[in-house]
Image (cartoon, rainbow, N blue to C red; front, top):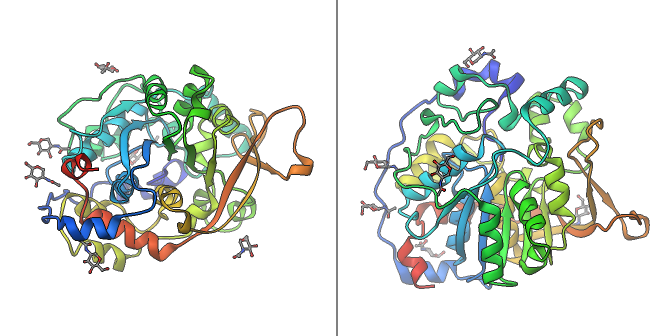
Length: 395
Ligand SMILES: *[C@@H]1O[C@H](CO)[C@@H](O)[C@H](O)[C@H]1NC(C)=O
Ligand SMILES: *[C@@H]1O[C@H](CO)[C@@H](O)[C@H](O)[C@H]1NC(C)=O
Ligand SMILES: *[C@@H]1O[C@H](CO)[C@@H](O)[C@H](O)[C@H]1NC(C)=O
Ligand SMILES: *[C@@H]1O[C@H](CO)[C@@H](O)[C@H](O)[C@H]1NC(C)=O
Ligand SMILES: *[C@@H]1O[C@H](CO)[C@@H](O)[C@H](O)[C@H]1NC(C)=O
Ligand SMILES: *[C@@H]1O[C@H](CO)[C@@H](O)[C@H](O)[C@H]1NC(C)=O
């Protein structure tokens, strides 16, 4: 997930990114359990899922969507993509605490670094091939910018920027630091049942794939936010914001991790790149969601903004029910891992007849279009009436 602008854009918009208001924690309305279960029951209820993401103050919707559909969220992993894994893991924990969900959903910290890239080698790649509009965790370190309420980038991955916790700093602790080992354990415990969601870099999924050769095949599948195709013209014509929306930081921050994960033998791989740009929040929509006041709707109203599409939310929505996807295709996917390539970290698609012989690629589902109205309705419901640990116990 990419949230605010950084790098070249940050300098121009730094004052906009500073905290504009304090998050207010509202009360949660009592749940009408009978109508809730009616509204939320889906054919896929009970599916187990692990969500790996670069969590942020307003980044909780993917797991609320899963809970709203009656899914069993085994836990969250915080990865290094927009910021370092420790900061994103703590955001995951803090946002769970906002809804009292941390007592039933653990958070594991992912790897600090991608498999190969470092801030220095990423910045050298940019010197050769041009800056990305959004540089994620590898934007140059700027402690002044951090102190204004932004997540840390570059420098020491173990440092935390407390000023960026608009949701409140977490009171609890992370369940562990070895997310890949934990993922392997969970998948071995429930063979064939666990879907892996990745909304950030694929580093931890890649580590799990390499840790246990049967990991991928024992999951239920993998869904990712990222993997854009045929968007080069959109990156060159138009604003740097348009370039940002069509760039692919989740893959480009760890190309080798992306290749290791996306060429592993998952029973099903769903790529939500281009389609993730389909639906944007509008001010009217934020107002409508905020008609019901609670901790989540407050954070959404005050910190989600209207500039970026529902990237990570669309990826989650795409796999909740088959009917949520209106149009998709499938092809064999590879990831460019040539450091000297301008497309380092971008995906490549092949049809059956022309796919490479010397390597084994996976056939993936590539989403073109989702049911946007249904996505907005489900986001609204999951924010206004979030599930609680008591609801989970009854599944
Ligand atoms: C459930 O759906 C009905 C009909 O769409 C709606 O009137 C009701 O408010 C919903 N209940 C909740 C708790 O969202
Ligand atoms: C942690 O506890 C303090 C004091 O009760 C509270 O103000 C804060 O919101 C809590 N943090 C989170 C993330 O819930
Ligand atoms: C969380 O628990 C606190 C204290 O028990 C309660 O005041 C608050 O309403 C709860 N929040 C949610 C979202 O359930
Ligand atoms: C660091 O961030 C501050 C606040 O946004 C900005 O004024 C300053 O120009 C930045 N420094 C660099 C070297 O980019
Ligand atoms: C995780 O690592 C941090 C240091 O980065 C340490 O403070 C913490 O105790 C570790 N947590 C667990 C559960 O091992
Ligand atoms: C699916 O999307 C592709 C690419 O945009 C388009 O060419 C095709 O016409 C669409 N199919 C349907 C049924 O909408």
